[in-house]
Length: 318
Image 1 (tube, helix red, strand yellow):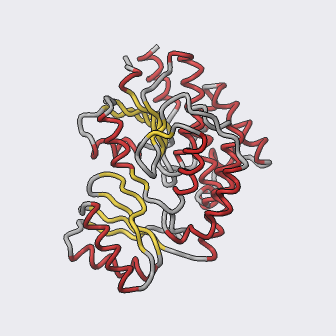
Image 2 (cartoon, rainbow, N blue to C red):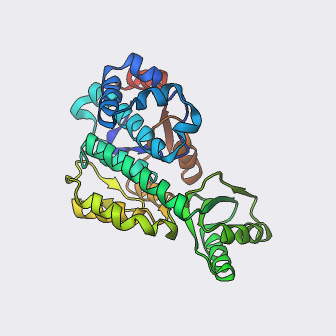
């Protein structure tokens, strides 16, 4: 039986998408079907068809990936909400990068439709930044965050181009982001310093890096025009790995997040230190569940990524 006071709900970011996501969920749960239908109407095209049937290359376009994952996460949340009602009071919610918007919607800080417009615009702006200032990203496995920061600084200095840690996902798994020239210099440095693997990611958008600076001003204007509420649940933010308490906190966080490191390791550690021992992941795969295992081995991990998994979770906890 779930203990709400020691449970956190977490929402994944880009990379968790897959063709077929949500298809079984809407067949079984009316609350999920209603969210996908609302998204289709708001966007003016069938996002649900894209999620359910692809094609993958269109779903993987950041312009579509971001709303797709947001809608999937909210759909899962609404299914649980309809089953548990007022009892559903987890200790925290949090999301990785794009998933932070989903967490804010779950916490009542962001209206679903407003959040959908925000993530669609975020995807559009990030795609635009990638087309005008193409960058690169790479995963570095087996080094700690301080070592990777040093490598980024050295590669930046040698190339004269910015390179930063974009994602601190878990101990030994970091993602770097910046200009192509700097990434190419960093990878052999990482191998020399003992990295187990270095993996160039297939992206053109250098997320969470200075290359996103060109869109920050426009996105902040969109944030300023978006109504936010005080969260009804504690939301751990990516930028500071600490709770977001006011609408002003949220706007500042989401604006800074475009160019800041996703401090996921510290976010999970902060929740564990506050008494969380169970992480329920709401998304198409089990990406964050795998990271949680690497960050805190004793934590229980519950990926709810299908109608079957949701049904089993509800049966065990209602």
